[in-house]
Image 1: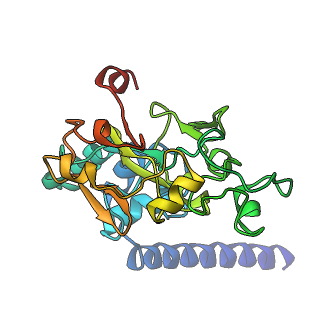
Image 2: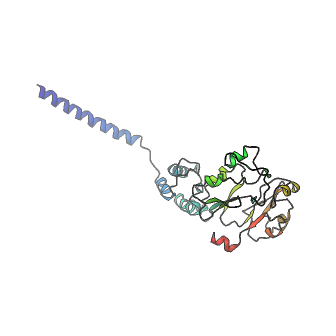
Image 3: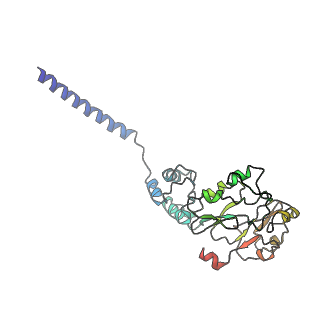
Length: 275
């Protein structure tokens, strides 16, 4: 009698197991979510840094976003132009092919220790944000680089360093254009531009010429000489400050020689090629 009970129980459990397994198979097929094969292709093309610079949680999320159309093909600053080309091929976006350039960081200030006037010796928290929160900083120019390296520490690719003159310098060979340095700067003077851009106006100050001369030896005085000299109208006045329109600049370098304050930097072709 006991043997029959055990046998009956075993058969019953086996039958129930088979029924539940069949139900799970049916449910999984009914509610299965089809994955677009392009998601895997996009993720494989990504650099895998998972740095979050694109605004997504990671590379997997970025790949899904690209396929769904909510994330732009050039949304990954780490991959640069080469990645955009790959993603454009995967997604069939022919309009993006050959139409992107790797972005690198530049600081729009040349207020070195020699050039910029310091109001006091800052001995507080050794960060730009800390200095900014203490009376607006220790530099006489309220727009200039504070020189305490927040942008350098924010760089995850070791592409930035503080120069001996107190200004951050970016290595274009290492910079991926992730934008972490841009976010870290409390004065918004770090920008991303195409790696081929060779003219840069190293000033962000919206101050009258008289005030500029008091606080910095190389600040823009708004004289408009560069605006008049540029044959491509690539430089415009933004209030009292000259600003470069990088998409119009053709690197003819008509602007830097006429600047009386040496505010405009032109990277010679041989140096640019090396970079």
